[in-house]
Length: 521
Image (cartoon, rainbow, N blue to C red; front, side):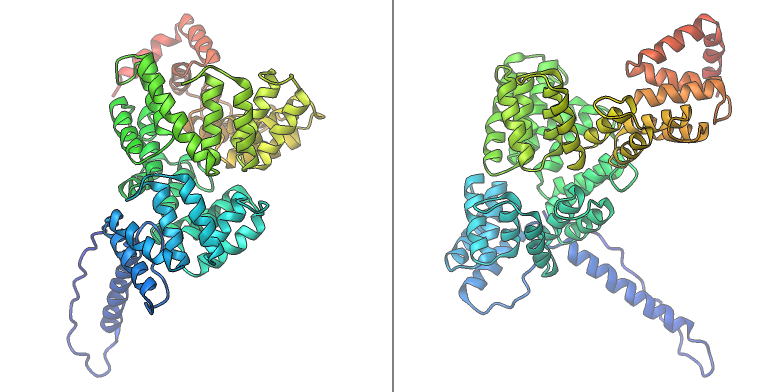
């Protein structure tokens, strides 16, 4: 869907004729207004570029180029069947960009049946025809060639410099995960913004993800949902799915299971492979619908079918989701061996979450011989692949001295990385190091600052710790009222320490005064 930005009309006030010797301020202001108007027009034009890529640089000089341009025009107007027909004609003449766009239509099921197999075949053909974005994808996925992130980045940069919004998004992904380049969330965000301005649906999705997880920016669910809504409005199944998850969990919006189902159904309608999992979970628990194991199983089986197809095309997230389905026994019998198989496939495609899941299976000996050594090795792989859970686990192993010599300095290093990647547990752990003076100078104010971050991110231990500091007045002004407030929030999330603290204080009659304070305006 083309974004419609309603630009307010700038009223130009005509200044009186400049008199001799008069200052030229009015003239400069008038020029500034014209420049501002031109800038807004440019921004609106960029946002209006279609979701499948930027307008080609070359002028039409052949029949296939005319068909390709007509296909882009049809795509811009959401006439997907017509766009597919025109791209197919242009592709038959060897137009590499038309081949790529036709593959993209098959990827989303726009105007053609959704088919990851055909998408993969067409993108391989586009690569052979010289399309840089397709060639980068082939090297990144390892389709018919050894996977090589550095070569993939060369081709993606080449396409991005030529104006491909999808290539810009791919460059951002590489910086976000540190594939072939140094991991850098800020650079990733700048590329996602460029991609979004060029009309890339994935660029919009990834911007929402960075704000949702707090990668390179402060975690902000409001901004995350804003980007996801823009993506959803343009037809992104991922945007629709994540909005459904936000309503299911109450992230940035009031928890609403009806709206969660509504958005997941929209995502399912456009072929999203993950949304059926949420629908299955809601029916299994009876959230927003009558509790029904039969309906839950039906949704889980749909998820398996879709994820299997996406995984066959190299989608690491789909492989990881398949592992989760087998691990939990959703839509099939629990099978740790099959879960491990899918997790390994996802890990080989660079999924840090899958690597961490493998470490989990080795830690408990599920489907594999129990091995603390292999669990730690996979945890490290997950950490280096950008998994915040993996980074936090490595920090915990250094703090506890499990499998490695105890080192609070190294623990702090990994906790800091995990916190930067959005781990609320790591934020609590850093606060604990400052509170106890482990590896750093004891600073209650720093502990309070980190626990505030962790509490804002939803960590119940951080909420409890913050309540403790307010109760004792260490690092913050003493406030028994705030202590009770944070303990109640932690207890509502099931924190046992907070429940114990509340029980002790209520028994000591402090709760009576807290109840009075709550009644005050």
